[in-house]
Image (cartoon, rainbow, N blue to C red; front, top):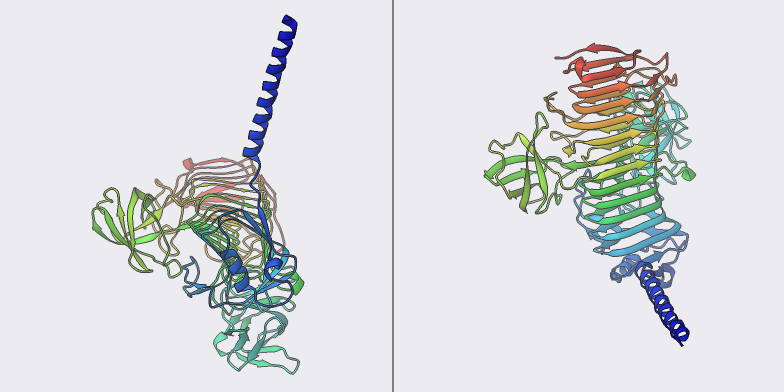
Length: 632
């Protein structure tokens, strides 16, 4: 009997334990199993591929009908066309973009959540000036597997057939770049636009060789120079564009020219006050402005997002301006396995926006004004944000404050009220930056090809890692700036690691704005103070450099700069031309270390110039480098 009772008790206990285990497993599985995602095939809503009919209205009506449930919108692979639609016009103030409003929107996600758009490798073809994707106050959005392009691009291209001191002969593909000619200019024509173009000096006309590389000493200096005001334009019997005049510099025969005629008015993608955005497997072949603009967004991940020319159409231009542009963001920016080539500006630009003080209205209230025409109308801050007050001359932060209220008087000016008293001497010689909207950034495994300007522009106090990338930029590969006087792009760095990257021979082969070296740390400080450096903690380690010219590193106003364990070998792919004749120029810095680097015997310069600082601030463990001191 005792054994039977014991057996019964064991059975009951075992059953209870089993039920508890199964209940626990079920509960755990139920809690961790992802929510069922509803799949929507656009074909079921009358949206067909390969018709060349406008789907702008149909796709937006579909998106508008969605609630907050998790959905995946699937496009069967094919071609889908988007034209401007009068029902999808909205005013947006997009940073670093001309104030051309309202914007024409192709796909709009307004206050939407939990949406994935999977184009399955489709070509989205746009017509005229239009913004392909706009995310407005949305979250948990994924866009993937899409190619963005135009049949008729908003910037033209031409092949150089002949060129000498008296004439330049160009071949233009009229199917992609329709145009007509009069004696004073060329008129390019789209489906609903016309733009006049004529030769101009400087960086508005860009030359590429057949390898998609900008020839040395042309990007910022022009590839066509001479009497450009008195050029005569005509068509030859063979249908070629003939430009006759007095030229002192001409492009190479067989090379291609980018004939920039339109303005930057729409981004390719505009991510606006949104968060938790994932972009994957996207080719942006063309835009009419910035490529992908993220403005006051939080947590953005981009993987295999490429800003590249469409080689199947023999194009050399990928974008009218910057590629991936981030302004006033926070959280984490992750950029991995992304390529950029053929841009008129920088592949990646991360920064905030400073606003200058107009006047102090009382001890807690300040009136400010957006300084740059391409940064007006921003929703610059909100209550609770922390800001820094910067002296424009030294770029030093003299105090911080917390916003309690902000009133936008118009698109140009605003009044900010703070929780505590502002500095007593605050006046028009100061600017203010928002310190709450500053992101971390991780950029890995990317390729940066030849673009008009630089490679990566980094201005954020967040943690930054730039690792395992390849650079072939025509300007500086990396520019760490900071400015409260001209572009007003803010953000003193505090923690930057640049390691295991390859800086190839073409880096810094052409000067364009602040390109003093392959890596240029160049905040715009009218009066640098070596005792109060602007940037902090920049580590450049285990990289390979292949310079054809002298300058490798230029650094202004940094506390804590190391250049260690890098390998430098000389290239002979072009003749040295740079005005800077030092390998390293270090200006108004503290706590600098250059050590453990492998430097080839024939590397140019092998020298360090120190300015506005003493040699005591430099720890040097590369005996082949000589030091000269130009301290003031």
